[in-house]
Length: 338
Image 1 (cartoon, rainbow, N blue to C red):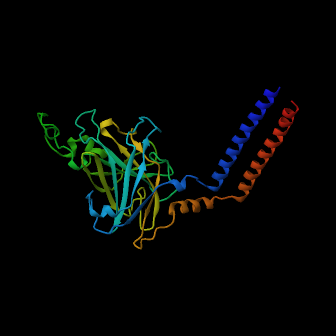
Image 2 (cartoon, rainbow, N blue to C red):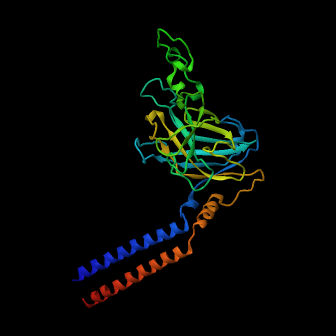
Image 3 (tube, rainbow, N blue to C red):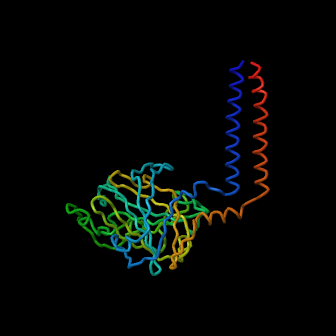
């Protein structure tokens, strides 16, 4: 008999804890609270103190605020994978341009796709299509929340071969009538990888929807020093395209990163990704808004705040706790009689 009472008591305790956790979760959802917000790293894009360009080693980067961002293997959709543990990011703005510099460890330079089993190193930055802190789905956005992706691929700066002999010195073709796009199907079809852009400007509204933006506005450059890649992405702060991010001084938004290691045959969904982190474009006055992204989130959640709903939830929590305590009393009394 005592064993049964003890078992009943343990079961009720577990049920009470589960109920309390569920109710607290509902309260947090109702208030739009996110206990992890304060732990998110913040990337600050200050005005450049000295001339900044696409040079990955420009002196201006020594004064930039750099943060280290943890990455994890992509595990949402197949193909899974990703082996790069962290990357470093810094940002600056100057004369109406935004510059983002990424750096990560990579012991091999993979920039050749001459064979079907070769894959290049790559990196990408993902923004919500509209600067905001209520971010869309991390991978490729969603129907009501598109994303703007800036992707760099190793080797893009070297250009694409115009014929088979440029691709391989041992290649041979008996007739190549023209180097017009008509004879290069991928280029003629607008395949984004075949286009002569160092940084690809992409848009998406969910899985399977990624496409090249109509206007390719991005610039970039990369260097590999034998141990690591450094890549600079650059674009005008503002963009007239509705599907692409538009920034400005004082604007805060969320941003995510991805890295592919070609040596590990990573491509498509096989990549290392970050969670969304905060990006703030600091004004010329140098004033940094205190936790601007968290403040924006709080303002957004306050619009949906319903005091009546909170009272109902708290009342439910009270009832659950009372029932739990009342139920335990007979068990305690029966145990004492034993």
